[in-house]
Structures are given as structure tokens and as C-alpha cells.
Length: 334
Picture 1 (cartoon, rainbow, N blue to C red):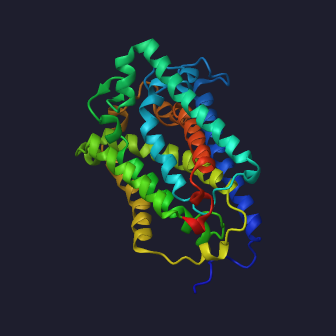
Picture 2: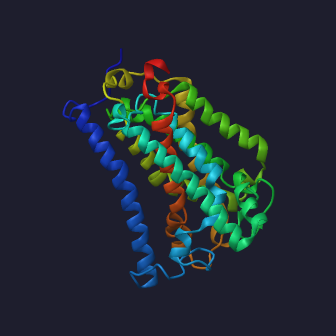
Picture 3: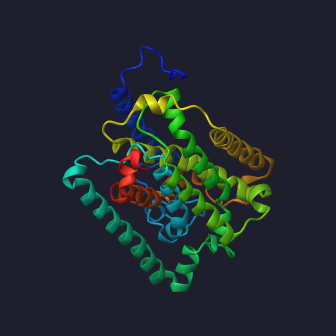
């Protein structure tokens, strides 16, 4: 068997897991802090809650964070993100104190909060904009406030969602074989569920050439990767590592040989953002996007536009990890 590519001086497995957990939560925190600092520097104040920061020039930071109609548009996409992360939890789905019911209680609370957040956003949006508008947001009809059409929002995120699934699929090999961090293991069935969900929504909402050639689409999808890569994906991996099963076999995970599918996912993880960057830079992104407040609003404020999505994602993941079938928590049965 091929030995794991881990230098001899790297700490033992438990220490590597702890370091990885710290990194998975520290990097998103630093990204958000840096974005806030960029916004504060641009606006000349540290108190941004009531300052207009959104790229459209209409929403304050507080309104950007509590952007409920935007959150409704993101719900189907965020569900897909959570499914992809559950697909690498095959050897890592055991909450502390799980055997005494602690994990089940956490999962039950998480599910209740998921329902409360989604229904609350729907009610708030319906109260301010009407039920028709709220349902259009939820069912992917609206790209952004001033642009709409059937399925446009899903297509507006298609390549970035494809990238997210590919990057998550590469995570176990990257963590285990290259970095020597055990605790992530693909679960074949739930990985298939995640990709089936992605394909089903693609069939429902369709594809268009704009996804690949329109600078507006490319720029937005590139920005989604910039947002969800260092924040959502890392937070999800951190949660999965926190709930890793006791007694998992790190050596088996680290010795896993690459497969053709792994190489395909690795290629997509690199080629999708590279292609989006190329298409984005070929057009005038500032002209195509909502750019009333410039680049700092288009990039810096975007991290806060997804605040409710981060919360929804983590709650979905916690609920799935703790309330899922026993095969999630016992890989030998999956």
C-alpha cells in the first residue's frame, strides 16, 4: 500500500484534527473581519450597521445581513451545500455525548431552528413584498431584485454550485492523504443523494448559454466561489471534523488510492474558477453587476449578504449529522 504523504515531524492524528478544526473556523472568521475592515476603511467609520454598504446602493449593513428575500433565493442552493458536506461525513458523524442522547437533542434543536428561520424569512418577505414575490424568491424566479425569469437564480449559481460539490468531494483525499488529517470519509449513498439533488434542480430549472459566456453570470459565480469557498465550505468541514466518530481508522483513509472520479472532481475544482475568472475579466464586471458603491460593495459586502445562509447551512448540517440514519454514524454499516 502507498504510505500517507505526511512528513515525519507532523504531530499525531488527534493533534492534526485539532489544528484542522481551528483552521476551519479561524479562516472564515478572518475573512469576515477583513471584509468588515475593508468596508469600514472605505466608509470611514467602524459603526457600519446603519451605513449603506450593499452593491445596489440601497441596503445598510444591517439590512444586508438580514436580507430575507435574498436568503429565500439561496435556500435551495444552501440545501445542496449541506447535502454535499453530509456526503463526506461517512466516518465522521458522531456528536459529543451522542450515546447519551446529547447529539439527538442538538439535532432536534437544529431542525426546529431550520424551520423557524425558513418560515420566518418567508413571512417577513411576504409581509413586506407580498406572497407572490416571496414565492418567486423561493422558487428561483428572481436573479436579483431587478432581474427575474423562471429558474434564473439557480442558473445564476450553477457553475459555482458544481464547483462546491467538486471541492467537497476532493476534501477527504486532500485532508487525509496529503495533509494527514483523518476524520473525513466519503459516504457513497449520500454523495449520490447530493449529486442527484443537483441534477434534479438542473432539470427543473434548466440550463442556458449565459451560465458559460455572459460576464454577469460568470462574475457572480466567481464571487460565489470567493464567498462560499473560504467561509461556507470550511465551516462545514470544521463541523464534520468536530463530530468525527471515535475509533475511525485514519490510516485507511490516508492510504486511499485516487480514483478516476476523484481526478474529475479535482479538475473541476481548479478549472471552474479559472474559467469563470477568464470570462469575468474579458468583460466589464463593474458595468454588468450592481456597482453603485464600487468593488468594496461587490466583494466585501457580499460576505455579509450570505450571513443567514451560513446559519441555515450550519443548522442543516448539524441536524443531518445527528439525526441521520445509523449508517451515517457507523461507516461499516453504510
